[in-house]
Amino acid sequence: MDANRTPKAVGTAWGLLILNTLGSTGAETIVPLPRSLIQMVTMGALVGAFTLALALNLRLRVRPSAYVFLLTLLLVPSLISSADLEAGFGALFRCGRLAVFVATLWLLSRWWDGGLTFVRHHIRIYFAVLASVVAGALVSPGAALPDVYGGRLVGALWPLTPPQIGQYAAVIIGLTVLLVVGRRTDGRSAALVVVPSLAVLLLTHTRTAMLGLLVGLVLAIGSLVLTSAAARRFFAWAALCAAVAAVGFASALHAWFLRGQSQENFSNLTGRAKVWDALLAAPRTTGEEWFGVGLGDKSFDGLPIDNSWLAVYHEQGLTGIALVAAVVVVLGGVALLRPPSLPRACAIFLISYCALASYTEAGLGDASPYLLHLAVAASLLAAPAAGGGAAAPRTPSEPRTAFEKPSRRRVPRWARSSEVI
Image (cartoon, rainbow, N blue to C red; front, side, top):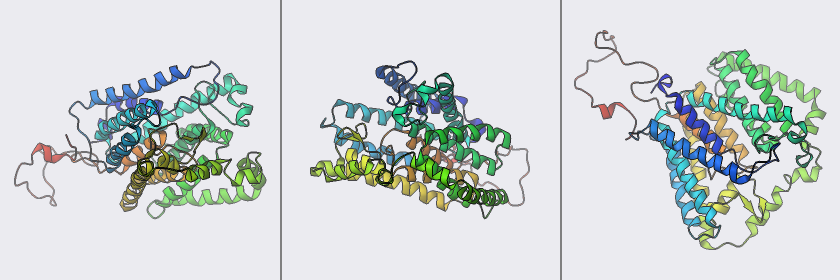
């Protein structure tokens, strides 16, 4: 299906999914928002996204997707581990949320055609989220740069933490840069997105997001170097600017990465290593080893785990780790097998960013922005539907070319599309 035929309401459904994954905890806002109200809004957004996607896809047409299929399988260990209520009734509630989240992705997969439609939705919606962060900083700089977070930028209108904001900024910067390299947008429009987003990223002092952005762009643009002159020029200029920055601003970059921390605190990843060691050393039954303890808030003994793999191991066990690893391997393998193109480069950026961020941030095993990033990558790697995309169907009055063979039999309608009903 051609991107131009995608209903505009699909972007609305995608925005509601993003709203659902913004979370309900974070910094103190200018106007105190009860957590119950925030959860009502986010869960209402998920229900709204599912309802809208179902209304747009009443015939339940879906595209075959290994990514969404693996997420569906991930529901099995999540439900098994949550059924014994060791993690409380909240675990079953989170399972239900994950089920609706995955069902919505199935419904929206009808419009996954290898085009850039969902990339543009992703950029627009997350840029609107960053605009709310900037608005909060302008209204109340003290609330947006609180001492409790070490002066890092937070959400003053909606409770967003620095790592969340840094993640959103890095993702839209990377995707926008790739659109410029692929000549799918002009430099002026890109600058209106990249410059403020980069300023936001720097104010969050989020090291994981910065490293993910740099590594993801190197891999993505590197995949275009052999086939794109624009990519080669951008790569050369970026390497030159990086060398100059490394020499001229070495002390400033070092201070930015340390964030005023000691070398010891920096080496143990701001205390994360202690939580990881305690989690791995904790005794576990055979059932907990294979299926985890149930979906929770990604914490252990009241402390955040901040590692996707250990969070999945804790909540969904070794079975969950195998499925999440299969997601990353399958998407990465498909991206490597695709011929060089801009959609492939965008997918490589998103996959590599999520893989790198998974070491210091949780989210690959539950409804989260990371699963939405990978969903966009899956939409970019999907094969175009028959009869759409590159060429429009020929009218009966148009002559055949010398390279076309005459049709010997009528092809049934169900066989002309890669969709499944």
